[in-house]
Length: 251
Length: 261
Image 1 (cartoon, each protein chain N blue to C red):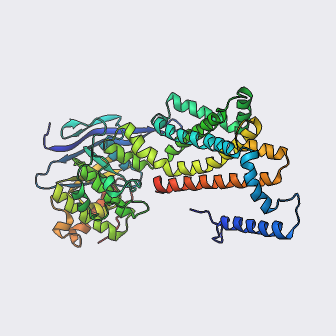
Image 2 (cartoon, chains in turn purple, cyan):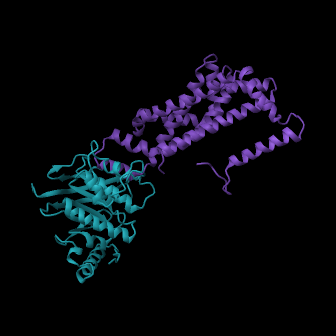
Image 3 (spheres, helix red, strand yellow):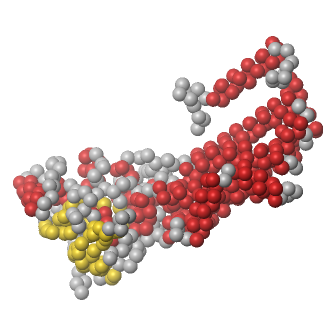
């Protein structure tokens, strides 16, 4: 589903309109300035980004740091969801304490602490994304199973289903549409966190490219990075939406 | 021990503790018996007003809840947890929207056993691959009903499922239940707030008062239902309804029957 405003127009239409205005204004009407770069220079800088800023490596580093841990975290939550069902378990209590901890300690502060402790690790941002996604999904799942329709649980139990099957076949399934919506929101949060993380830590990633572009005051490179990041996030959101439609289609 | 009993509920009681710590007795010393009927299935109703512990009673009978005292025997055996002998069909639709009709009906079974006859029996032929998301209550009830039938239970417990249905759907479902009763020799235990419905469908009616939930009277209507006798438009149907109303008034409950002919 593409989000629409009250008049029913897709925001992507506005985005395309803005791009068109920028193209016409800054290419043909307004002379070169420091406000926004000329579109032709931005297109040229796409090529320069590959060589001067090592874009491919940095891009793949960011993308793999986000999506691989996110996928692993999702499947791990699926495996351990049976233990989350029992709210009295030690594990559930531990997760609740993380929830409390996460409520009062912003993600960026945790990122600072991690960077301070592991300044040279190349995998630490993946670990950071993994734990952020894992804890967020676990907490969400645990809160959401409280809202599963009692009728589903009663029916399944009366059919003689075991506790583990109840979790796997009813609770986990029932939570899926909302969990995908949560992942959709979390995806944006993780992207912003990881760009900030790379920006601060250095090493590899789009955050590093952004930092270098700012350092060299390379406006067209900056503009290109924003476009590449925006398009990648958009593709990511579209894929999550597609997966929701395919595997969690019910309301 | 009476071997002729499908279900024997003996002196069960159930209390819940509220947040403030006060104990509320929901079910108090309830006895209920359903005997085998050689020829066909039976339809038993428990008639009670809202908040009288009807749903709790059914959850105790199917083993989802455990009684504080008393015992429940199914075919002479002590009920110990849920084993699929007694199937509970809740008030709200309980078909799973992530499974299609066929998968829903196969849900309580091991492996992919054939269930087409149950799908046909509830009138869902042709909808096997349909996902029941945002469908009508009647449609979703049929799925839950077929799913209950597929596990071949001793008794199907119905937790006032007709209350939210429109009258046309309700009448169609009554017909489905009657044909299933004859075909599979299934016994039903319905809890309802609707006097007309109980009289219309049942062979036997238990009256239950609230605070705490307790059975105070039982009616044996007979082996034939009101419809089979053609009584739903006749005097006995109306007199039964008013008699039940009077009995509820005698225990201090204002119970108005919903007139539907």
